[in-house]
Structures are given as structure tokens and as C-alpha cells.
Image 1 (cartoon, rainbow, N blue to C red):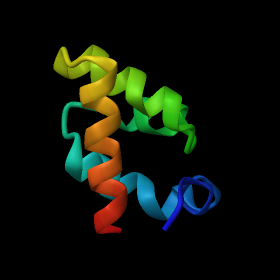
Image 2 (cartoon, helix red, strand yellow):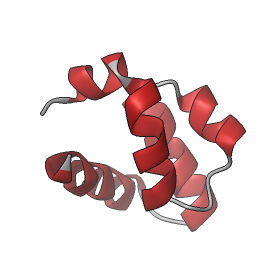
Image 3 (cartoon, rainbow, N blue to C red):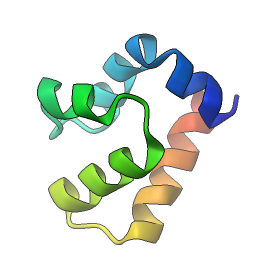
Image 4 (cartoon, rainbow, N blue to C red):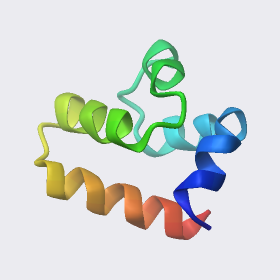
Length: 65
């Protein structure tokens, strides 16, 4: 699966994203609206991770879905 598919079907994936990154609120996940850079930024902010760590987590999450 590629990110375009996730972005296009964000309503389906936002619950899965929130399960993965539980510190993100409903509003934050809605604001992401499927934009990968927004999601990476939120993960960095909430979890204190580097951009590379956030991107790797997103890649791993995407590979499972």
C-alpha cells in the first residue's frame, strides 16, 4: 500500500493511526487529514522523536496496513 491510498481513505485509517499513536487526540488526527508530513510532525511533537524516527514509525505502520 502506498501513502496516496492511505491519504485518499483517511477516514478509514485515522482510527488505526489513533490506535498506533494513542497520544494523538481526535482533533489532531482529523487535522492530519491524511497528510504524511503533518502526521510525522504530530508524532515528533507528542512523542519527542526525531523526524527520522517518526518517518520510520509511519513506514512500519503503513507496511502493516
